[in-house]
Structure formats: structure tokens, C-alpha cells
Length: 329
Image (tube, rainbow, N blue to C red; front, side, top):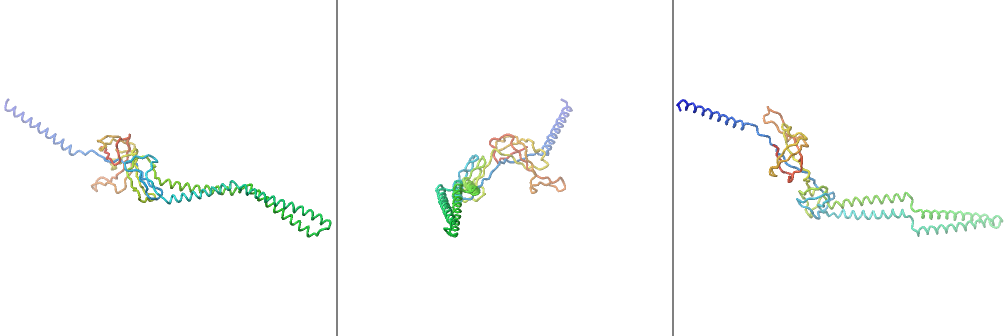
């Protein structure tokens, strides 16, 4: 090979090496300077229900613990409330008394009272008939001039008094047979219903001493301890519904186009071995001003707010739990 050919090959190799080096350097610079892909990290959340008693009392028994699965109606807490028991006894006694008064009004007078009223009427009627006969005899004698007019007037007065007494006795007898008036019966029945309503109210309070779960799910927190006083309206158990879960992301508004409402997104759940899943955006709302992101340079860009985005799994994800991270790339 001639000296000139060898020199030419060296120049060509050097040129190729320089080109390759330039390409590698340019590629490295481009790779290093290219914008990093957007990664959005959120977390799973689930519907939680804080369950609190409606009546105060002392915790008698805690029937569940963290991690227990419960159904609707599962008893969680037993509460001892002597006040509710006392009110129930009072209301029950008042209801029984009101029902007795109503029954008495409906039944009317007893058979013995009716017979007594009948006897009084018959006795008064007999006295009126006797007074009437006496009046007739006195009037006959008065016409013959055998008795004074004074005697006739006295006989007439006695007859009228006996007649009125008989009428009054008959009225008493008829009233005893008829029983109480319609208005009295209605008033007694209304009183009985009113007291029955009070009993139902206290029964409802007594039922609340057996605190039951209004939802199905998993117990995640038990605040109550046996022997403690439980105020009204203060949560003692928290139940989470693992079937009602969603992911929450905080997204800057200039990146929000990827999370349009109704759009489906692909996510990765690292806690489940980077399992992939698909979710659908169903909620977008601006966060308060304190969560607003602002441009780094005051003379560039604009103030961009941060939005809360929620997405539900398109299909149930086995093993997913509240608090797990969710990644969108």
C-alpha cells in the first residue's frame, strides 16, 4: 500500500470517529436537555362512615375490632343507659293507664252500675205513680169539698216533684246504658295514642343503646373502650366501604387537559407490584387559594391554580386499599 493511500485512510477514520463522537455528544446533550415526562402521583381513597350513638351512656361492651368485616345491622357497641330504661318504664306505665281509660270509655258503665241506675229509676217511677194516684184522690175529695184546697196543692206539688225525680233517674239509667259520650271516647283514644307515641320514642332511644352499623364494610378505627362514657353524637367506630374507592390527584391547570371529565386514564399501583389499571375521571374542582402554584419568575408565565381530580376504577381492583399510591405517566 502506498504512503498516500495509508494517509488517506487515516484521515477518513479520523473523520468518521469525529462524526460519531459529535453524534454521541449531540445525542447526549439532546437526551439530557429534553423535558422530563410528566408523572402525576395520587392516592386511593374510600368512603368512610363515622358511626356515633344518638343517646349518651357508658360503654358496656365493644363487639368489633379493627379489620372486622361488618354488614348493615351488625351490632358494634352495647351502651348502658339507666336513664333510657327509667324513661321507658315511665312511658310504658303511662301508656297502660291511658289505654285503661280509653277501654273504660269504650266499654261504658259496668253491668252492676246499669242495674243500680235501673233500680233507682224504677223506684222513682213507682214513687211518681203513687204521687199521681194520691193527687187524683185528693182532687176528687176537693171537688166534693171534703178537703181543703191546700191539701190539693200539696198533693200536686208532691206529684210534680216525684215525676221530675223519675225523669232524672230515667236519664241516669239511659246514660249508663249508652256509656261515655262520643267526644269522651275520642279524647280517651287520642290520649292513648299520644302516650303510645312517647313509648315508641323511648323504644327508639333504647334501640340506639345497641349501636348497629348503617353500612357494610370494614372497621378501620374503634375509638370506644369498655367502661368509658360515650357522649351523644361523638363517633365511636369508623367503617370504610372498600367497594366505593377512587383515586385523588392534584393537577396544575396547565396539565389539566389530560384529565378531562369523563376521560379514561391508565394508572400504575406500585403497592400491587406495579399493577396497571384503568380509571375514569368523574370530578374536577379547584383547590383553595393556599394550594395555588405560582410561576417561579414574576415576569414570566402566569399564576396557575391547582385542581383536585378524582377518578374511579373502570373495574374493581383486587387488593387495592385506601392510602395506596397511584401513578399516571
